[in-house]
Image (cartoon, rainbow, N blue to C red):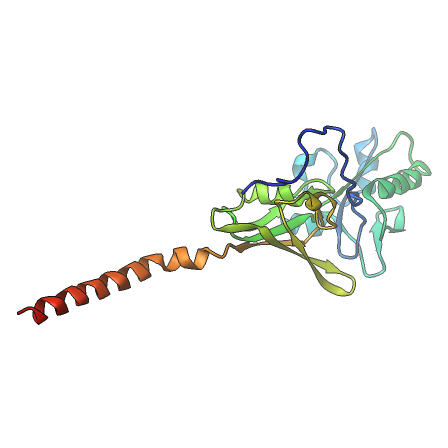
Length: 234
């Protein structure tokens, strides 16, 4: 089954207006923040972890919670020396700009780096490698997530995929059809942290799974009929 089969491959000027892809920070997000200067000792005062290199950073989920900055219930992070900063609803670029402005008040030639650490999505159902996948960027498409999971299996239904998303009100779901170009304008085309992508099985899966059992039953019935006919002819 072809992806995006009704999209135009001839008109190269076709533009599909996608929803905004820039991620806006939410409560409980974990941010990687580094403020670097020419003096490592001064830089260390403004950071949670050593600044001698990025090899020391975020090697596990535990490291993320220890060395990252978690957005609290008020939508703020608390930075060493610089203090609290309200980041809820901002993009990573906007947060980086604000921290840069704060750092410039105290430091000369400081460089600020901000990254999102908790961008993980769960891919379940009829894919080759279901599991939880981390993504080291601030945006990820549903096609990338399915690609990480090894693509949809032969028993998966590309026309029937559900995305479960956490929103302030609770949970919401989106139905996705990978075979139609409407996918490109769906609000679920760009995934968000902690989204769950579930690829539902096709209608033929139950038949294929039960086929060996059905074959055995039919074979047994055929054997019984042959035996009955044999004994009737005796």
